[in-house]
View (cartoon, rainbow, N blue to C red):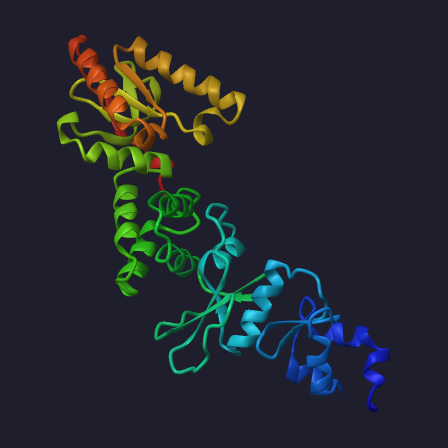
Length: 325
């Protein structure tokens, strides 16, 4: 193609790009002079640089996928998406995306992070899978690369409990990956996985369980168990249950109990069934753990006193294996 003729066929440039993102070297091979490329990427120009030597053939705000394509081009041929972006591409819904995108490369590669792109060198580069046409790390690696960099316990619990509860990845696989990786940032994820092993299924339950553990005088609770009466009738699946005194604690999160009319009806049905069997029920709003911990403590103490004063309920319980991965 003679000098300048590339401008007559801009569609050809777009066809060579991925989502309108293309490397400078690829544009040069299509006949666009290097000086022209960078001139068109100046302020108010028709193109823009998303990373060093990586061009978006447009001047509007880039989409998240375009930023991921640019990060992969910048990082090189063996790079793959990880972190929460990768988890999203596997289907995970929870978690707030970071400002920067996160990619993995092999440890021997010499590629630096730049603004908006975190490039992580690793000796344990996994085999990537294709998601939306892009190479992505396995879900367990994506999830743990994400939570290691999050400082909010609730956000970590939200991501890990969703991955396990929706059977996207076994908790044993997450624990193995956590053990194999860096210890940095692994404390809270390890605590959350321990809670999941104990039956916790949601970030709200994680927060309540952590609060309960700070008050051993409140007794030991069993998490997510099937409570059955003497006739074998399932009363419900208790979020937390103290079988010694017959106390059921339901963590009344909006997501699991009040999002739909059917959830409201089922929550009320379970409460009636527990009470008809002689159990005492306390509903706990998760936000009280932070907003009103003293009031919550008094309410739990009162609930335990009432439960202990009631005749012993003739019920049995078992772990709700059907609801666990």
